[in-house]
Image (tube, rainbow, N blue to C red; front, side):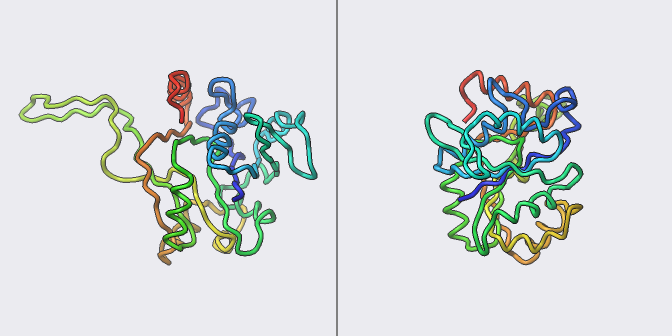
Length: 242
């Protein structure tokens, strides 16, 4: 199944890096987070990737330019396995929905495909995600996650601390963790470049009862700010990344 990775945003909240490179090219360990995402899908046998580029897209192009090219695809070897990378410039000021819509030229009529963001890593089981999506027979499945809380949680009774948990996982509520599966028919819900994926397109699909959530309780982390990158670096060094 084809995998689209959104890699075109400006990443303004981590400007320490994004003044010179796009956020998906920020390294965790010795590899850009974009490559870590590709590696995860590859573990489940998915080798056909489409990178929706925008801001500072030349940095991504330069990273792959030395690899062998077949037609419009770069052949990128990971663990002696050929991975096929298609790079597509989708505009500098295009929003998430519009960026996905611009990738529609690579998707055939009624074809299923996956997509995710270029700044989030997880150990979500892609095979189980696909199985869940096929079983529900709906237009789109989103991976729902419970992120860690930003601050420590204290339980107090009569001014006495009953428990103290340092940044526990949120126990109520789920958020969008990326790692979507959908169908070519989803493109009709996206109007144009200024469409925000998480607004009208997904809200409309949800109102039609065509959006299901695959609940993932394992590792998930989004690199939104400098501190997130530092946390990911620590996790990676502890060999707990996937």
